[in-house]
Length: 321
Image 1: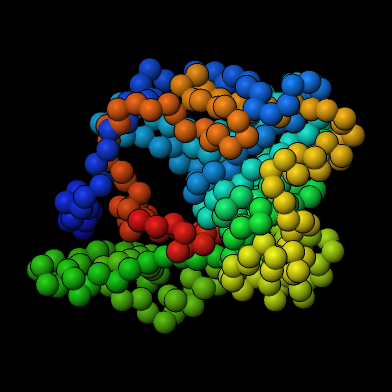
Image 2 (image 1 turned 135 degrees about the vertical axis):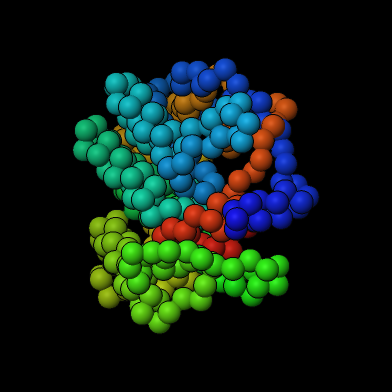
């Protein structure tokens, strides 16, 4: 009942309905495009763009399914693993973070790729590289922040709502049955007890400890005490992040490419990206958005944020509804 109630409420909001036919007919194979440079070995630019998730994006009418960011990264790394002309990876990160698991998977995939190919990885933080976005950057050998980057937010969040007051007003009562006192912890249908809050907090602390460990490994110049101090969820400007030791430098994308070339011992290079046939790339700042097409489907993101609890490496204000 709650799902239908919230679904009807969200449908009534302006801007929830959109049309998306761009994925009809399935996904084509990834193809290589050069976005910068004319000669020399290749630098693969991997985009970490938007909320980091392992969920595929589809439409309610079943007209198409878009790949998840996790699947996208893995497909690109698999393709790059067989190309000896790829001498380095440039991570272009513009993300508020995402789920704990998706962030961790991408971070590990990058570390495993580095072991296989033994090539340098440089991260370029764009406008926003917070929480899970920063977590992924810790797989890089060198981190460059754009002058206007917002980064940090080293922490974990579990979002939840208490809708009991609203449900009482519309005459909806909770009659959930469980087999244990903690089975419906975090339910929006009732207030949370103190023991439930403490139990959830213990899980958050475990994930936070893991995040700090990733930063410890990715920023060897910082001691554990400094990481603990910085990992209180706060965000940092580029200058603050540099002063704190969270990044190695401040610069623009071409400067990050120059750093990649230096680390890979390249005099010249070509920056490449992998695109699907229905996607378009013209230069370094092009994203993997499909070409303009009619869109059809319901935007589920506001609904799933309410109905699907989860632990997130996410800067919450940036993930606007």
